[in-house]
Amino acid sequence: MRYLVTTALLLASVIHSHAITRYATIHNRFGSLCAPACAHIADERLVLDNSTALPTLIPDTTMLSADHFRVQVRMANKHNNPRSGYTVHDANGAKCRINAPQWGIYFAPRCASNTRWALVAQCTNSNLNDELTDQRSMTITLLQSSDAQPDSTLASCQLTRDVNLYDGLNTFQLEQRDGTLTAWAGNNELHELFAVPLHTATRAIEAGCYVGAGAKVEVERCVVSCSAKTVLAPRHEWTVAELDAHFAASIDPVEGYWHYQDRDVDDRRMRLGGRYTVAVVREGESYEIIYLDGAETHRSQWQPGRLKGQFTPTIFSDHYDLMWVDATGEPITQDAYATVENGVLLTLKFPVYNSQLRLSKILHP
Image (cartoon, rainbow, N blue to C red; front, side):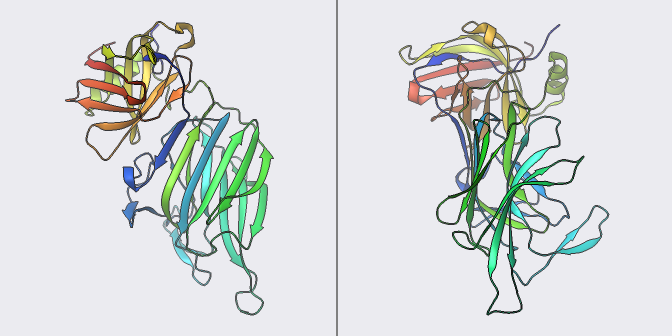
């Protein structure tokens, strides 16, 4: 039986490897964020206006390891006026008003699970009608959510300083390491809020922006990173037959099967791990590279289901930021990029290692 595997290593090993780190900013048009059609860019920020009665999640397409990851977003909630309410619509179209909308960041398994964890901020006043005694504050809460159960609070704190309490920018950060999830926040610099023990029954996650009901969030930047040496899985599990059907219906010239063409490798810094055949599948605004065959170095390590890489469009035509996993399972992202020429030649370039590898489009693996 033929199975699709996640992308195999094109390069066997490097002298040093680097963590996966992705920046979503105005410089790449926030390309790695799966923003809804109603989102737009204004004043060098991504504007996300949620007029529904449910939170909206804006995932980054970068696949992260649940063992060790970090998500950091600098954002502002423009619907944070203490004297205003904001109109939202429920699933039936009925209107209601939301006061003090929530906003923040989240992460969730990249599988069928409906569980998620969110670090959400909400500003309130102690006595809005009395200017002498009133005190405004921000409550930051770590929530665990599931369709089957009501939200549960894992940790919470209340801040009256070191954060912007109105519609200015704040930075929120979550980091998972060694079974501990730590939260930070701040307007000018990050301050640790709390740390909780947390183990997730998954290996790959997604992370991104949390836009609560009625919130209008402006994102200045979203940074996700992952440095764990972990086997990652593609967003979907494919068979070769399913890939054949998918590619037959696709009009995207980047999607399809690609086979080793040639290489220009500095053997002092990189070594070729095999002559690979891979599949490239679009997922949101990015592409996942899926290994099919050809690995020689660490061949037993590259089994069906492993993700070999991912590339994300930049502002330049047919030019992509590249995340590549070397033969030892370590990600390479430093100055790595990919180009596609005429829809038939895929070049993976690693300038730091003075190396590149080319693959040509084929009809069948």
